Image 1 (cartoon, rainbow, N blue to C red):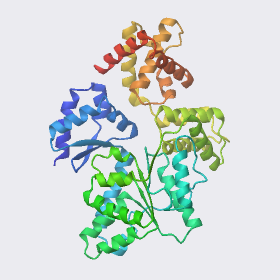
Image 2: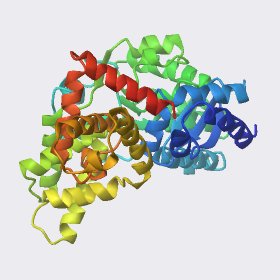
Image 3: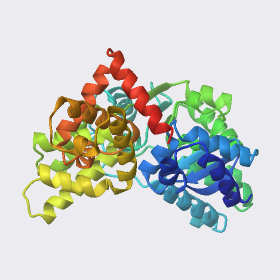
Image 4: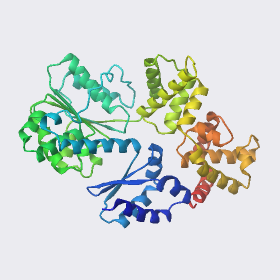
Length: 455
């Protein structure tokens, strides 16, 4: 298939269905990467670009246009730059695997246990307390009560940390037990290699995976489109369970949300404990930030910790991303020769991490529609005047920008005349609250939203 030709044809249709601003910012920059098992994969430049392309305003147009351009496509998916890098790495490893000898293949693609990810440094809160307790119980008594354990949730919430914690605990407390800790890609690659290389018999593959005391597989969702791998894993699963061996699996989704997963496999996954890890609340985020800062021998003030936690919530950052943001703040703190991070340093680091220049056009568009609706000028909204006839439109502009653009509150404040992030937060929350019980507010938001979407 000529993926570029298909995508070019699809883009022409999408351009007629979304605003020119949306097309230039979020659609035009996507690139076709692969077509496999009916799924066309597009890549976005970063996580934010992926989120915008995947939202309800854009993605339905993308998928329908692609399917019209190429009826063979059953589904469209979008990955960001980090996911593309991981995908390319897996592809390269798979290609290398097919050329390696069995001895060389033995460790290719295996997960290396992270000794720093233990139960003692896993922050427990309402979002993960059940799954953390289950993981610890398994580590202490593998194969006894909870089997299998199926952990699911979004990226960067601690699923892999728990797998590492289980392995680290068993290696320390019960080192005689044999463990296989792999990704689903590794399991698949091993199986494929066995199928295409007579020198690596199926018996050796089964010996490797069906005789261990504990099998842990990360990101098991990737086997859902691989029928051969599913069949082999089905029998591996049965053998281990029947012999009292422990199985722990992680996934980015519940088994019921894998439509191409074999029903027998779905049933096996659901035969034990299925538990999700949800997004942590503010208090838990703050605890995580303080823990990471302590490891770096930095102290975070309550004000700084609150700001970084709020930034994570506003931008839907997972724990991994949030830690990355803190690492950047700590780096900036060292550059400025400060003993601990300050609010000013946080603003500097966050501004660098979330450049608002690419959102300026869309923000101006939103502000322009608000001004037209209320018959005022842009300077009245971004200016310092506190007249009621300007304050209310300003609050509506803030709320609409938070709805249409995925950028931090502090950056929205910069777009609106350099206002503090707390001012922006107050305006957003006030309008959001009024939407529930004030028909006028609901009508204004609806009217201006239609104006913005019609661009």
